[in-house]
Image 1: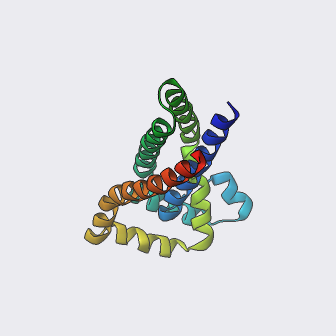
Image 2: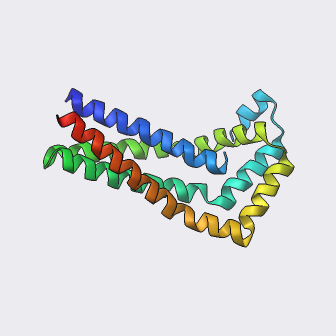
Length: 165
């Protein structure tokens, strides 16, 4: 039971970090936090627009799905049967809980972007993503993320194999 909790905790930490990467690659902001740190509301709005244009929510959903599939495969490879199913179900429940904070995460990341970029800079990046090349990049992002998840799973499998020894 302790090992199962440890595996689940490690997987959730990895998932949270991965979601943070997705958000950092596109943007995020919390209005009350912006007020506390003195961030211009126009910057917050521009950061949120950037995230909307880049489809951050869709990317987050795709990443959660890919991580769930990867976790399920890893759990089945490491432990067959009901124990693997229990681990996968627990992971799915925790990911659902994590995603219940999606809007707050996006808000928090908008503040980070707004602190580092002017509204004009954020608008320029948004303009890029609205261009044909930017749209191509956005369209490729889920496949790139999935390929990245596969790479992560490949090396996670190596770690799991090493843990069995």
